[in-house]
Image 1 (cartoon, chains in turn orange, blue, cyan, purple):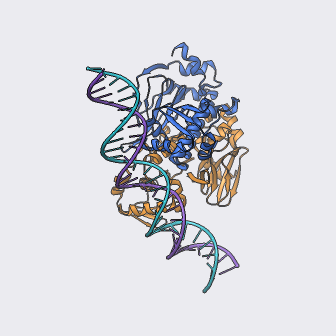
Image 2: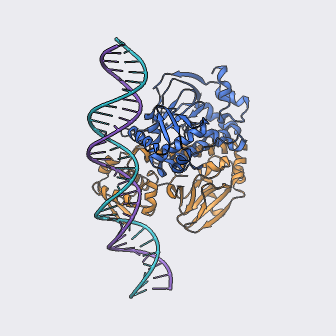
Image 3: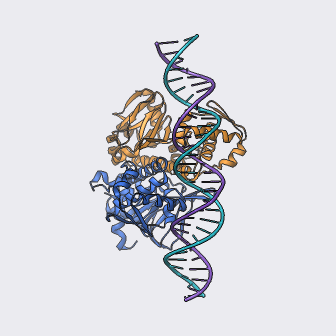
Length: 257
Length: 257
DNA sequence: TGGATCGTTTGATAAATGTCAAGCAATGAG
DNA sequence: CTCATTGCTTGACATTTATCAAACGATCCA
């Protein structure tokens, strides 16, 4: 790993509070790799040998069944992924592919499992990370089962707004077809959902979306802290993991799914 | 806790390989409590002070939004639940209510967090449990987003068959309205889904369901090991957590959701 | 510049799912 | 036993979502 990247990796939740010694032991054999866009990093069912840490670019996690395909999460830097499979030394339940040129740090799964068993501080950090990921998925399921397509989109936009703090205009961080898969609908329906939201002050212009009547939009969307995780919490040490981890193995702009 | 229950609790995945000393330290202040049917143990948003261990009965985990409600999992003994919230000392993202008379062991969250930080063996066990829960949810989301209602039901029935090993007849372990919520549909649609499956040899008689043409049913359902977790794995020590944990925080008969 | 590809949008139509209302069967209480 | 309650089923209908087809615009490459 380049000396340049060390602070960013060090800042990952899985290394919170760990000693320099443990950090070195885990990342000592890690190596940085560059991937072009649209590269499959991992296929469903593959044995997982590494923990992946996305340092630059975007990665999509997807699941398939019977020639159907859905997006489970879109990751942005700095995020780790497939930690659960690494901890259990199990096969991957989802595929991972780059949707941009990516820089990824690959950390030995063996090193992680071994070090967990030796340093309880690291073990706790891993458990906290996994807990955050778990809670992210709970939110995702509630979002999926309890809300309709238009409501999911509305909440996605509001979450995006809350996270980027850019006034009334947000920029969609992915292609619309990718966004559609993330929100659990077809591209056609996403397009129609945007049309529906015109009645709530939403104006779309390519990737730029203006939220003209946030109040109206909120009345439709009814964002809920137990689903959407809007507010990036104050960085007090206890709430930190839950807030941070949300962006790991999930996505920074990710209330939508 | 009654001496009677100790072996069953001790056998939980979160205590796999831990020393007697650690086990006593964690469970020393735990106490057993009995609840009648239809009792709310925990509401969404509540602060979580205990890890719950279901020793007898059935518990439903549910999420709500805007006067809608869905079932995320149904637990059967012996399972622990809301571990992720305990690890992060966070509020619950789902409610828990008994759907039968229940016996539940309540373990201090503080004791768990404290012991994790001291005994790496316990920390690893917790991390493995969380990983299993996480993977259960990934399966659940794939099931929900990739399959239609009839397909979910078909796979639920096949999973039930695989787990109970009772020939061609399975017994539904819950009321149909509960099953419907678990599968993400209305009771009316569950009823119609059963009708549709008549064409695949499925005969319903109250809670008893005969799967007359398993081959046909499988061709429709296309069970997938990356979603359904049919086979309870052989008890080799590495795969154990993934298989066991599936039944914790999930349900033994739970491929369906 | 021309042509091809790709992402997006729109319309028409079909399939899936939810909603409302009524009826039926099983259960339990008086 | 009779009645009321509850869970389940069925039918008619509304809504949502998916599918297929076509058209448009932008981008890339020859």
